[in-house]
Length: 297
Image (cartoon, rainbow, N blue to C red; front, side):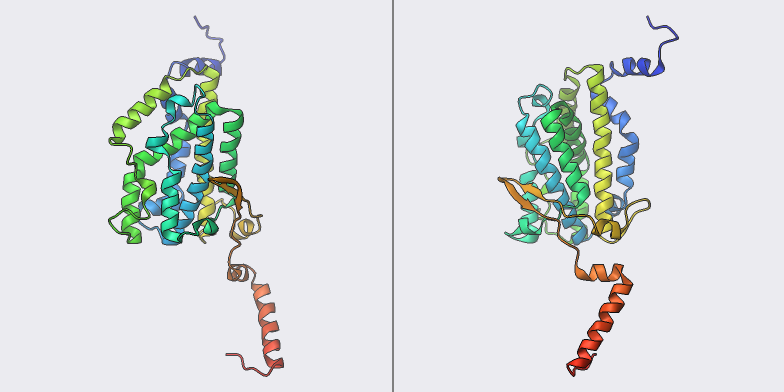
């Protein structure tokens, strides 16, 4: 029997240990979940204000994230905390994302991949977890897959209408789960498998903390993509900050030695960010034009 002098955090932990893991995650991520949905990128998407450049950049980032997540899930498929929630046939997204990227970019789609630093950090965290703390993969798989299953159909229809895509589903494979015949029942099964995992109270706490971290990694990705698209959010880094970050490589499926670097922003973006540079270059161009006897328009 607990006394009234027991530390409140200890009492809270004891009470939490009696709760289902899925409920603990839901409670622990409520705030960050709402923040992710309120980012400019996702808010615009839900209102049908998604453009093709936004969509392609989002697919590129999702590909890097799922490539890392599914590599680590496959690597740890026999781990007691991973095996019960590993559903590669029903949930894997890498092949679907490759199909979408191929549709928009053609056969050389890998050369068009853009992986901003926040996306790379997300992928690196997934690899770190998979290599050193496989039990925490539960948090990432839950937040990504069940989120996609919950909102995938709606967002897919929004993207189809906003982008004028055909009824055949081309470019929308990411939102389709042909291996899941009933999303509601599958999510119930998934949560039941999660709740059956044998985790100590301390491990449950670490998993819930990692789930909150997963949402925050998603928020950082969404914010950075919005900045790169020219609409910085309040409190986010400026375009100048992001454009001066170093390019970061990612490994592609099938050849982990192959890397793709972040594409440098167009030169005109630099000019718009540096008015003085634009003025100096303009003067130099005018002088050169006069020197060779041409008339500037």
